[in-house]
Length: 415
Ligand SMILES: Cc1ncc(COP(=O)(O)O)c(C=O)c1O
Image 1 (cartoon, rainbow, N blue to C red):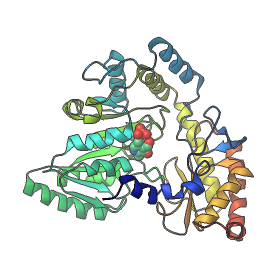
Image 2 (image 1 turned 90 degrees about the horizontal axis):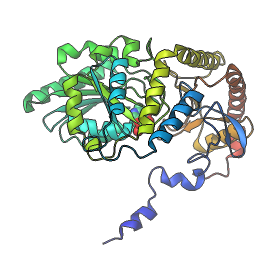
Image 3 (image 1 turned 135 degrees about the vertical axis):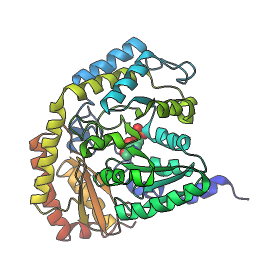
């Protein structure tokens, strides 16, 4: 028998194997200073394009005050215990009702983290007789929820309605044999490349195939739709989403998440989601802070307007300069370039150190070999000057990339 840790020390895992090259710079970088369009990295100010603080609320003075006041009034512990036992308050309930109203659903239920909540909701919603159909590019929380599902599952090619229909037919046939139902899971916005999920097309097949639809709208909540109610509102199909999910980790600039839907389904989740039944409830500072953020999203449309001014300036500027930004139709702005991992590392170092621009870098296996994805997240806090500086910098690094400068400099890097 082997000592368990022998394997762990030998095989550091798909991400861990990069630690010696990446840690402190590409992985676990320390961005310092108040959350804003300009933060500090490695001792100098950088334009920050890697934070999902879409509406610029993280450091808004009114939000900071609400958070601080709640922490003074309640501390960071209250209420103690799980919601079901002793961790329930009228403010948790108020937040749930306000969230439900905002996304046009009957009821909502808070969860502590989106990731855990999604895993647990999938676990609660289906049994071994039920069948799940989900988009191949779904977020890890959906994939990991699937691991708990003892029944059949089918994936469909990303945003491909033909592949969806092929698989929904399989699922329906299967569920008829097991006397179960079918749950379809997709995302409002795919956060890596910024494409909206094909909700409208999927919803059009709902009656024919009689399935229920769960949508993870982490990136759509607050950013899309006339009122900011998300991708369902944007595509005019919010009513057809049976279980709507969003996290507070993006537009709400906080911690926590929620599910919203019809009353009896939300009631079922309250009594059956193990991640909430067996965990302490959200602290009051988070709840009162979320109430404040939601109020601002509801009453200050100018936050979303400014976000979109920045999104349009950045995306149009990139397109005018001939950059490939894929099929994004949301705030998430991917820039696809060609190059190998060592070149990408040198390029991003140049971008951060010399052009003072901080964005996320994504390489194989998340994108195909030979592709580099630089991912930019515009927010309300950015300025048109930030956009201008960034566009010039991107043109300059592309010239160096295509001219082989980074290839030469990266020759000694072994990955
Ligand atoms: C699409 C999507 N779903 C779920 C989550 C997880 O949410 P949380 O950070 O609240 O755990 C994220 C990331 O935050 C996400 O991008």
